[in-house]
Image (tube, rainbow, N blue to C red; front, side, top):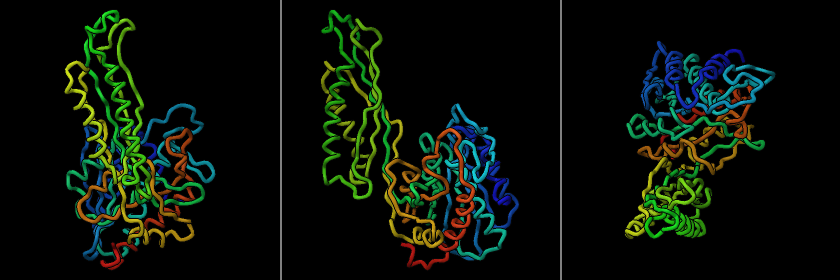
Length: 391
């Protein structure tokens, strides 16, 4: 066990709370620096926030298999009984912010690659590690890598998020998309005793909420838009604010909402629905003028359910009760689904999903060590499969 603890503890001790991923990337770069057949590339997303790609070349041509993990963590909050960035071990648990979500998955990926290198394993193609920034808020790092063409040519990506739940290890192949948006309403102020002289921004939002939610409710109930794995597209209006004084017609107001999408009614259709009602409202000059701001757009993702990557994982993890499941929430599948070509995608990693973001977050060391071996076998098995078995 000692062999596989240092990198994990070092990663946990880097306080990459929604920032400082460059420090993590440079640490990982140092782990692989000077090794034969290894190429490191650091790619900035923001100042001080850098992604990293580690490429390990096999001894003959072949496909590209990649592990992927995000380098940021959420804020620790209060009430910890273990130092949140201490990496303390007690019994079979290692504590710290990000141990579960998801520096254990990152460390397991790194150790799997290191073992393959140190054992001088003969494999075709390449094995990559992809470390991304900003997954917890916006998933900007993965977006930059996809749009920048840095991942073009990859054949399979295993995202090492924690997936253990209710006595089974989930292999996630699909997830809903997520659109976070703001609607601004600009009216005209007037004294509340003379409302006819003003334009009420809150009334415009009130009508918008009613009309748009009715439309989304129809979408949710429409069998044509149902996905057998992910369910339906849904909309939630979640925040609203307006006005500045009780005896004035409110000049400004805004609301925020979150749409969870499925492929049958995806990002473009959902955004179009939001925009259609705004355009209709703005045709009437007596009403407050409205505008749409898209704060985040993550597309729904549905990869293969029984492809070579999943087969390789299940073979490598025999005895772990691996069940192929969809994820109702969103993850970096939403970014990688837009890669060119037929890229096989999967989410699987160490850690209980319920431990993510909690006080006294921890990883069970037995599970972590098992995952390193599973990752190593999965990568080698996938790369060793004949071309015709990769679909």
